Amino acid sequence: MNRIDRLSAILIQLQGKKIVKAAEIAERFDISLRTVYRDVRALQEAGVPIGAEAGTGYYLVEGYHLPPVMFSREEAAALLTGEKLMANLSDHSNKKEFSNAMQKIKAVLRGSEKDFLESLEDNIAVVSRRPPVGDEFPNRFLSDIQHALGKQLIMELDYFALHNETLTKRSVEPIGIIYMSGYWHLIAWCRLRHGYRDFRMDRIKNVAVSADPYDKTRHITLKEYTDRYGDYESKAHVVKIRFPKAFGRRIGDQKFYYGLVEEQTVGECLEMTFLAPCLEWFGRWLLLWGAAPEIVTPVELTEKMQLLATEIKQHYL
Image (cartoon, rainbow, N blue to C red; front, top):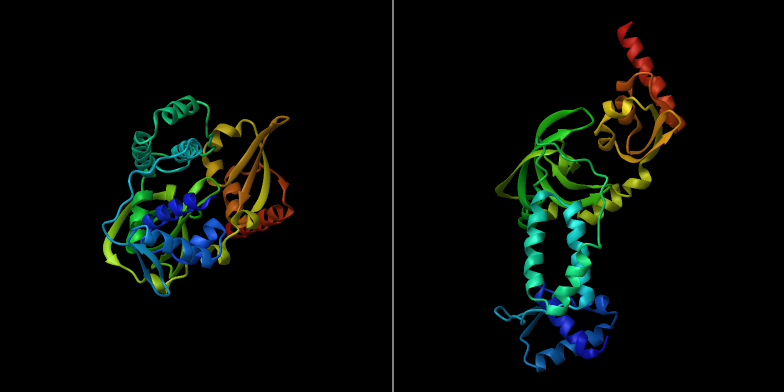
């Protein structure tokens, strides 16, 4: 990137954030801090009102705005790809907002870029294996949660927990959101459980964002949470189960809720592969199907089922 393009990009970066640290600029453009200082000085000498706070970073003086940004063909294509992803991987609230934003972006494109996007529109597809969400779970709270995160406000949730199939009311202090294994997850400090909890957003029946703020400094960051509790997929157990084909309809969408990642026909059976974070939780669901399932792997699940079956037998003796 030549210096003129870099100066323009730095100006756009400054307009996109209240305070930008010199280290952020250096990392983005792979330049030294000394070069950052020279570039900022050049912008200031050109009449751009850039302020600086010692030990904090740079900022654009209130009221200064760039003219409308023009996008390159490659940037426009990347945005179209993002729109396709959002349409399939977001919830109802964000789909609408992103679609509105894309309409504004397309409005400022040059005619050739608009033609290019129209020709590309039907040639990009995102296929999701995620099952449809029932009416009882609206799946439209991502925008509300983002608002609570940005303003650091306490939220009240009506949450349906899969492991015990109960609906509980939770008062939470959100620390972040994660997209994982086909679903959005809210990570928050739960006042009921007095600990950090992972709430899958498609299991939330209702959200109310209060006017009461919480102290963000009392909590770990989202990165600290993922470093401490993350790497979900590598910690999950790979489980292979074979069901008689006749059970396919009876199981229905439940298989998705328990972590289905693959399904194939093997002889007269349906072989389903799951990522299960907890073998006991998965095993208790498997008990619903009696002697029909055949555990292919892992051995630990077979041992867990033997213990669960023994527990039930002793209970009813």
